[in-house]
Length: 474
Image (tube, rainbow, N blue to C red; front, side, top):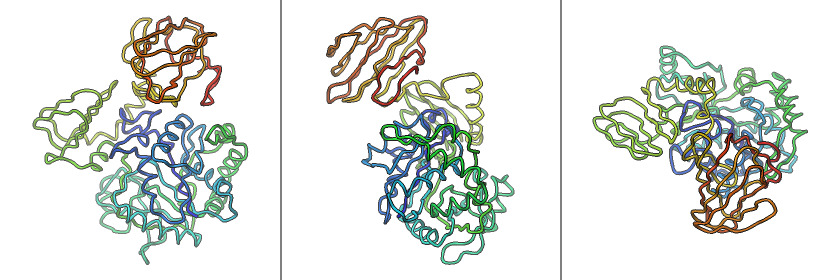
């Protein structure tokens, strides 16, 4: 049985401002209509002896991941929540320790490890490579998928392999991201492949290799799994045990040391979409070499990536550039400098700016809110509550709230009373009053919330009851 292990824990800082720490690139529809996570799960359709996907993600992303899987009618084997990021080696160790138990089988499952944020255009070719890798994994090999390089790319690590036999070869070495001259040498040599970060191996075989080379990782992961708890539809790893786990990648922890490493080359239109330049290459450009998304007007503009998220973007005389506009931030950079976007995000973090964390529109398990205006002692939000959903029973110490229903019907709890509000009706929630907002209808509830008070931060929430397990202070 093949268990797809979908790694969805990254933050995608190089694709800021579209990708944010609490809404990263794997949860965005960057290439098609579906999100990167949904595309990753969707391309598994057609593989034989396939279990439901086991998704490992950041605790902060849990409801987004669950909702996106629900949207494509996928019931996962499990969604395992990492309390902190510890790279791929511990994440896969957790999956390996849990997979057989979740399947309720004594047979050692084959893990197909896939990052949630990659593009693969040739699905049939991908399936053929997985079938070949599965056979090798069943023989005890630790398989990595090496991408046939098409350019001297300096943004990827490389795998050097021995001569191919029947479409696969033993790993000779893993090498770090090279400079341009070294990358050209790799391309000319013909025995180097881009490191895709995708793997396939037996669960117990991986744990045995990891125990040999990094027993500290294994012990921490086993402890975090044994002391994990279920929370709604999620499995929460024990925080203390997982925080104590060293951070390391599969490459460093296992693949560079094992004698059982094997490469299956792939030429399937792969990209890790690790930068705006890579995203430009992953999408179809127009006759001027421009990739245009949204309301964009161009004149004498060539070989650019242009994204308009909330308003018109117009360019004149631009070449080899990236322009990305969202409701709260705009990025402008030469395509040759897009790797430096990560440095910008670091500066945002140093200055305490929330633009690195969230978009102006914030998704919640019950719906979303958009902060449309704010000033001294006031804030205006547009709130959307999904059908049948409800916010927590809560209270604020510092702010009062006015609610005006624009569309749908709201059920309001205010202190000891509960009542309905229809379109064009409103209510007032005084400071310190316990309250709750619900949507009892079958259509989304839209309302405008006007907050007023001395402090309007999102951490001024005390939750008493919550459908989604969020209680206490925010």
